[in-house]
Image 1: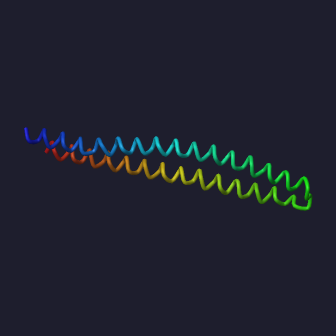
Image 2: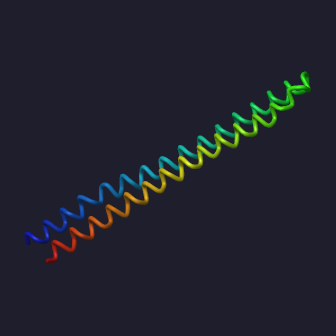
Image 3: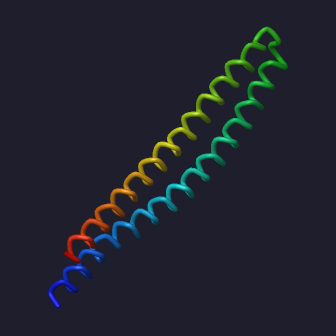
Length: 109
């Protein structure tokens, strides 16, 4: 009877972090989607401003290259941040699963 209580406590102990991790993952996906939408709007406005400047000052055509480079760099940072967080979430999930399996294995013995 005591073994069953320990086993259920061990499993319950790791169910909450798994649920939390799923919630964090979902929230972060929504956050990233919002950031991508804002990034797109920001650069539509930015390139419209560059177009207006270059229309009146053709010698400033180099702004297209600078704007493009900054836009690509900010997109790369946004996507790499998402990749890093997702990688950490997967590692944490694997750690929780391993710990849960060890507790379950220990409670059987």
